[in-house]
Image (cartoon, rainbow, N blue to C red):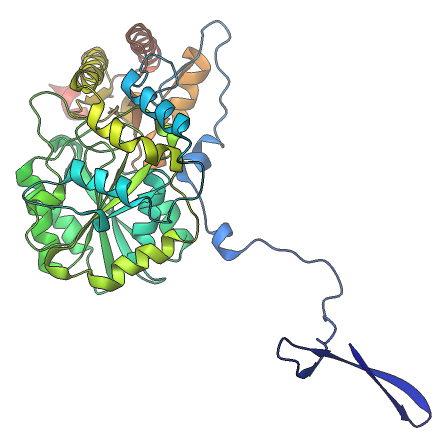
Length: 450
């Protein structure tokens, strides 16, 4: 500091002046006017809400002490230990650690070699990929976050499936982006209501999210249906965020082409990861595949993704080092066994609940979930699906996620990754619960007169 002393009217005043980095002088900062502590959460944090947590945290979940709890609510295939990943996947991680090559920071978008490995794995003649078309992320969730962030501004809107994964709304609303829900049709195995979806598009629609295979529905769209969705996106020039984390987790007899392989002009950001197909959600390895039809995204969107990825160096370097071996050396029988188990459990659940009066399960074609409709008119003891599933825990110690968490009331979602004997037991308890609370519909006067 340089101190200048000035005498004014006989009094001594100190004027403090500081030097900046260039050596010039500027006055010290004025004293803050804040007289008391007042630390408030940001608008973004206040606007961040996970619908699942908002509903589940408000439920009174007190299991029946006489029955062991069966949680059919958690979309984590590792919870019960019956679906371990393959030994080849574990060995790849061990080798990456032992090499000591991956203990440091990786580039924000991932190691070039690892990006090339992912590009090679997912590339096809209809939708080829190079390393520069891949952004590695901390799980598929971060991939979705980056994709929404690069495509949308506050005040824009995105189209989201209903029922659909709750994270889309959580991320969008926190960023000031409006969510428009387009309907899926349970009577058509959860196909998109194309007319409804198209009616929601306006000049501020910046992204169409398509989840295939679906969480929470377990549905798999046909090639023809995907082409119809692409036709709508092409007509209105809306890019697609394709959430394909469950890609290739489809039951025998179904096919699940990527959206990019069917698109001739619509640009697509495809989000995926290791979590579900390789049964390692905790490893937090995801990716964005940039399919840029006709150079519509161009340099700016790519650079936007690079810049956003620099906010947090997210993708685990050790998993990146193991990617080549994981993708290339995991035996096909591992995938087949996982899918066989999921299909078998789905069939058990569907067949058991199909014969329960008042319930309407929808048979899935892939992923790890099954949705069950509740004919609430037959269950007057309950106000809605949240009340129904809460009481199911209280009486039977079976926890299914109420579909209100997916903005689709009067359904509940079942996760089919539990051991088979647990699935059979859970279905038996659900049947017992429904038999206890089921009431036939009252006949109207015309029926009574006949």
